[in-house]
Image 1 (cartoon, helix red, strand yellow):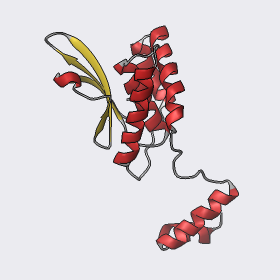
Image 2 (cartoon, rainbow, N blue to C red; image 1 turned 180 degrees about the vertical axis):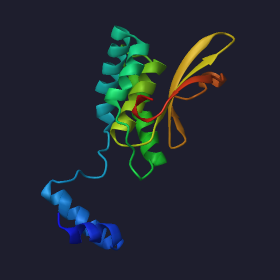
Image 3 (cartoon, rainbow, N blue to C red; image 1 turned 60 degrees about the horizontal axis):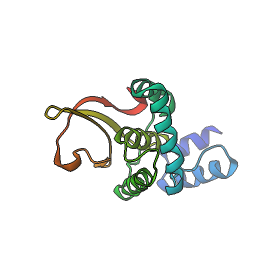
Length: 167
């Protein structure tokens, strides 16, 4: 990459920057914007996360998130439609699977992993309700919660929040 290319990228017009990025993409020097998660791809992730939680425990899975969910976020924000599509896919796979069967921990961690691995901003919340005592997990991205933050109308107070990179 020549100094003129760096100058064009830093000071050039948006069209010049787009042309330079296109050249890098064709040469294989840069990845395409973000890789979209497919609806079918959510199922294996969901089942794998559920088995991992059952095998090593939820606390250890939370500690492993820093390895599996990269700490970077793209400059472009996630669209509500994209997050809504992921939510539908995860919830559909969860409800259809006899193994997962609507487990909020598996759904929330899977959504967090898929969003972060796509380079999108996501925040994982673990909450508690006092009476009757219950725990709940959900991921927030683009203003949507996966699964819902207050299932069946019960409000949960967040006690643990994990943003990018498992922090």
